[in-house]
Image (cartoon, rainbow, N blue to C red; front, top):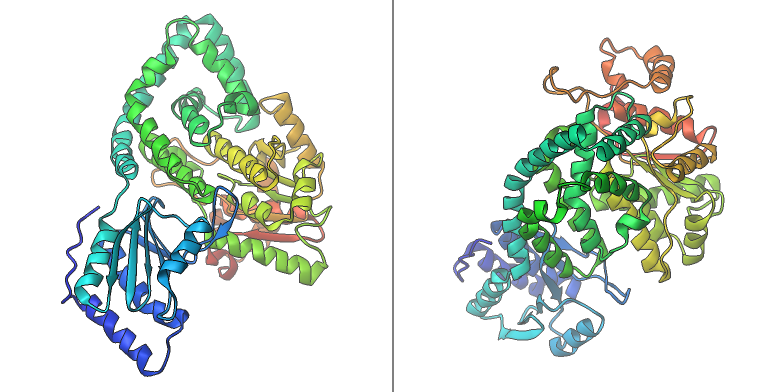
Length: 527
């Protein structure tokens, strides 16, 4: 992180004292008023350091206690750099800080301050205890706070840069190796053909050999992350899709290929991820961190895959707003609730699971148990891409474990193309267990559809081999409704995946229910 050259003569420092004087002149001494001055100061210097100040973010400690620091400084990856707690001049900071630490507030780098006094704790030890009515002391606190950087997080930033340079070359080597083994290894050849056919049935009948090879490469390069970041050594045994892919990998490694030796060059990246993840105790942060790892993987490994599937992750405040809004509408319009039995919920484009996890947090423990373990589950979701499917499975299962203190496999997640499910033909979708999940989902009545559809109207270059596929049933539904009623001269956009998502969702709930999807405003306001 860049060194901040903060001086008492800087305008933000002077402005801080001016604001405090203004509050004092009107007798505003309570914490809610006086904290704004320090918040503005933190905001300014955070931006100078390319960091972000997030206020009032809820965290859960390892003991499942809920805490809400006044401020948290994070980097552009969402990794925490420090925390801030504000008090007023009537508070005893020593008493208050003991209360906070007893409640589970982080103490690696935290400023606890009032308008007159500041304490800076780092690694659990008091580093500064100063009167900040003196500008030089205020500067010392800010410089000490922003100079802090955990060794693991520094290693993570270095590893990300190296990873994005290394992973394309490694991916090319793996692709060449897979191609060779397909020619020379009968056991792998048979396993690969079978897996390719499964993928074509489940995801896209036009799926190429290269795309299937890419799935195997994704699994090989990231499987260790899922095992270690989530401390889930049984991941490849428990997950119904990972288990199937491991069978193909076993055939690939049956003759000459040593998996660990091949991936040795990525050890620094894996280790940096593992060490950084170990510093994150709040699971929602760990979830965000893994999303970041995933995005970095695709930016380094396969930009076209990200483009074809419109990979966009929904900011948590939007997820929160949508879940709360659905609950409000269920209450006011239907006299029902997300917790009610029979209110079946589906996220058809689940990504890494943020919407389902947030809904789980909204449910009381009894309702969560019922909805999660019902057969079929009343919480269901689909994902068409392998890596987010893995992450969603881990996120959702962990959220259930956190809420109930017991592990139960999540049977509501399908690896399938949601639009493909609308087609009339019968399908065998990867594994019998996955096929069974899809069939049960098709038979379930849905009352809530929520999520963030894919966005990718067209592509930059018509020669790119990453066009969106056609869906006979969905395209006919669009033609019979939106296209038929549209007055637009250019109607290609009406076949965009996010428009298909809205059509699919409305058809899925039938006569009544709630659809909450992220969309751009042109769908609502355009012709």
